[in-house]
Image 1 (cartoon, rainbow, N blue to C red):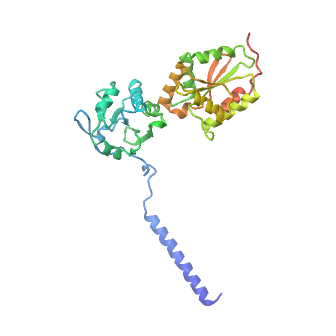
Image 2 (image 1 turned 90 degrees about the vertical axis):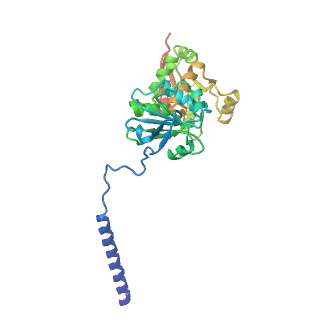
Image 3 (image 1 turned 90 degrees about the horizontal axis):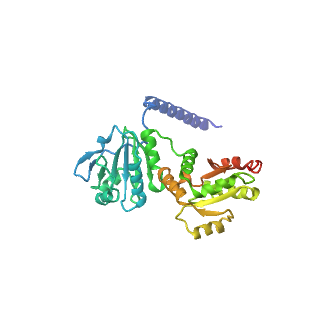
Length: 325
């Protein structure tokens, strides 16, 4: 290496050392963020003014100190008014404040007459409030804030589960579990379940499985459940299998499933008792919680399995028990 090259190399090394030293000094002077500092991603209750449909002027800061449920609601959409009705019918036990933001307060009150005086209904400056609460123009959402005004949940209606989430935030209630669905099915006294339950008392395996599907995606958990059922059907002819669809499905829906996904398992529509359970659970917990649910019956005992693993465990010994006389 020539002398000139060595000089240039020395200058570059010295410059880099100075740069590293400068960066170290600058970093040492910067304050260390507190571990208790709130994340910049954390969303807080917007500080804005509201005018309810009774002529009262309110500020959002007045709602602090108690969990707050804000529902942007279109009174012409049944799914949205059904959610509100369900919340008013089964409200949290602990105090909660409810604000309903709508484009037509009069129509909303007519559609949901159970709205009480302690619920705030807001119509004025509807579009501005959508912007303040970050509600897109396409569709409405529900938003939940804790007592400190921190946003803890926000979701579109098609996601479901707002009622269960509200009860969890306010009362600490647990969310969906197979055990909760099991209790509801047993209490429903469904004729469909009872007929199968009776057959398991004398069948060779003593076992049956009813699968609930409101939709099936081939690359989703529901698709895995269906594939598992088809595999068990091919291996275990002594276990009764049944697929149920919601009551609003048609014969064409059933035929499309059989044809497109090569399904030979018997398919039926849920009877009124099971339909009521299905609709209430979809409303409270959201469709993903119950879609693909597996109702297992063994010697008359009803339970709800937990996914594909639960199905394999339940059917692993099928055919190895003696039927009761």
